[in-house]
Length: 256
Image (cartoon, rainbow, N blue to C red; front, side):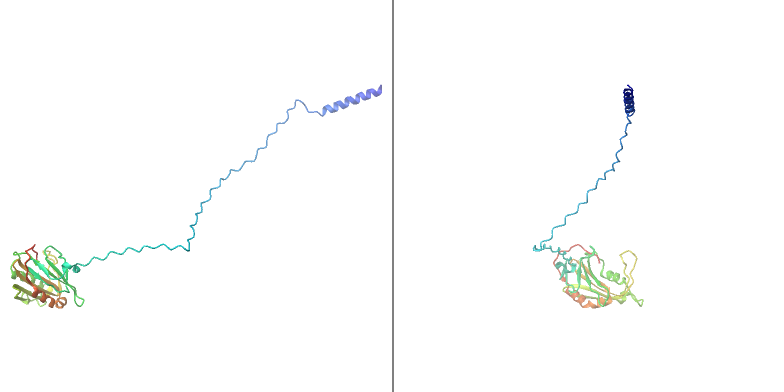
């Protein structure tokens, strides 16, 4: 009897011990917070690599080199006025033909007041001389008046009058009356007609001729350094001796 009670008591104690070990059914299990995932680093989008240019193919060693085009030839220089065929040889003017020296360069007249113009190369380093031919019909004034005007464009170192110093002659050449003037001195002509401003160039020379023709008087006026004039004196004399009448109808008059 006693043994049965002991067994029953032991069984009860074992049951109570087992109940103390069980979880409280009312206890709420601890809510576990999820561990945050590590922050992803921002993805670095790689930049596209720069395109590497494809090198040109190596030239074919057997290929012929390209033919280079020759450079365009430069245009030929413009021929000077004196080289023009129409500006060489005898000069035919209304009522007059005259032949200048071959060593003179004929130029296109610098103004409408001139019917012909020539440049005589300088001698011994001196400047060139200029020959101008004027013609203005029957209204050119008297021969003596023009000679006086030319002489007034020169002065003399000793103070004498250039008109007294000038050598003036008259002769007939090929049925034409020719008046010539030979005068050295200092050139004091106006720089521009009517300007009142005069040159002052010593050792200059004037050779001039007035040719009487049916078309009116022609005035040939050569002025330049004395050394240049002396260099071409024979050419001047030959030109004066070459004048002869021409059958060309009178044209536009010039101005001496």
